[in-house]
Length: 253
Image (cartoon, rainbow, N blue to C red):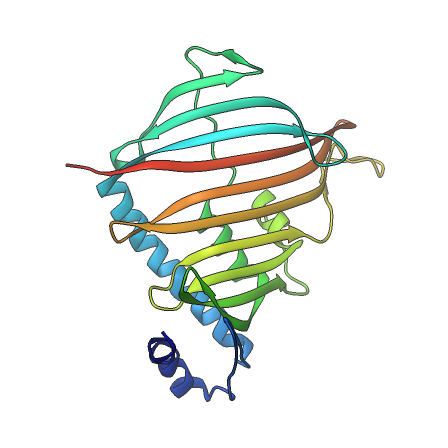
């Protein structure tokens, strides 16, 4: 494994003059110029676009979307919604089952996904600084761990960019195939909009995201996305956990 690991690392060492490495069990501390972090993210975006086209053409799968309300101790108080959606060729979505507050709902529309990886990454490239902080093994495979944080003075446009401009976290990128294995983001500043006279209609005070990806038949696929957010709308507060679970991947015959 160590020999294979250094084969992955060698090309970057030659390009940027990587400082000496210190192997510490399953973690390697490194020093790399910040620009290389952004360079790697741009490669990830290019690969993700290519992979998405392949996935839309070759795979069908299910997405289970669950919304749970939380109490002040972050425990689940109740389940508000659960949807099971079939994603067919070319990304066509079809509702299989929709349950609201424990009751089956007929002819329900598919809820739009609140997390689209490419949109998030494209916003991050515009708004964030990146730094490779270490190399870490996940399931026996080496990953770059890239820390991201908002770049000072950047202007955001739209809700996705506004949230990205207020968040920081880590991205785990598979060194061999350049895809995101894991993404963790947390909001560090609140976001408000639609207000008058110092009072905001919408206030978002928390937005934590955990995303996992994996491989299926050589194609990169979503494993899960977890979003925990707390916001108020017209003064009514909501504290919820949204979960997207992806399963039953199949090759299109």
